[in-house]
Length: 162
Image (cartoon, rainbow, N blue to C red; front, top):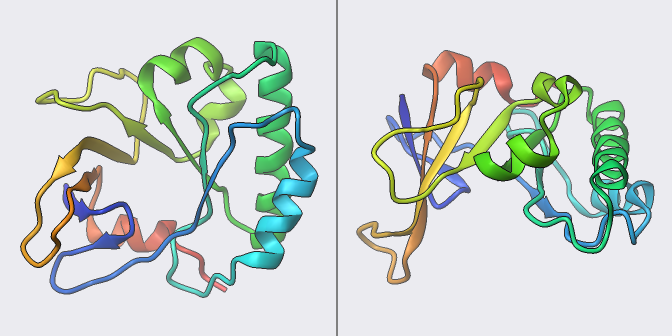
């Protein structure tokens, strides 16, 4: 397992992998295609970056069905543009409750599961954010701490290739 600091920098042998994240809190109120197109126009990714990350943590006023449609619409548009599956970031409880459909299990999963010694989620996962109050030398503020569930080669394979 690789240790990741601050959700934006992976440190192991001084390797850095950057990623871009979109938090979806207004889906399906806001058109997911418009949000995806805005992301594409705004974020310039290069080979070696992690795929876009969709942060879904609340359902808002939508139904679970409408949320799933909006999330899948965004994921499909981003995958079509970048040629790689986006990463789905959410808590294990939210994933089990709202995104347990098998179609979402094909996406890399970044699980937010704080203050525990091990991941309680029983499905496959790629990243585990285990705290939001970590300390890193040289950074004054508290940071998120994460681990990657795989090898450095597996992490590289997950990144944008073209």
